[in-house]
Amino acid sequence: MTGQKKKTIFIVDDDKSILRVLTRILQKKGYNTETAGTGTEALEKAKNQSFDLALIDLMLPDLNGLDLMTELTAMQPKMVKIVISGLAHERNAANSLDRGADAFLTKPVKPETLLSVIEEKLKGKP
View (cartoon, rainbow, N blue to C red):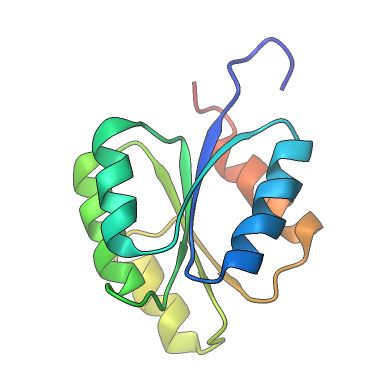
């Protein structure tokens, strides 16, 4: 990431420990991070800040992650969206990809897998 602007990753998950762990992993790799614990909080933050990539939990307390992803896409069409879920069901992955997710990952996700997918999806993004 030398010579480039630091990418900002938006982590949306209602599990505070997941937010902490993902934030630590991503910041160690040189990314800026922002977090939200609910869909409503995520939408508020997305109104005021742009993100290069969002990691979106499928099951949020107030909004379905796919509905949140649709709203975020309308607000920030160039943002890369990766859905993360503890429900490793093929239908969840297919629905996520059909609705516009750039990738689907199953929890618990290995840090090296997460970083590899993020790097691949951000490749070539200014």
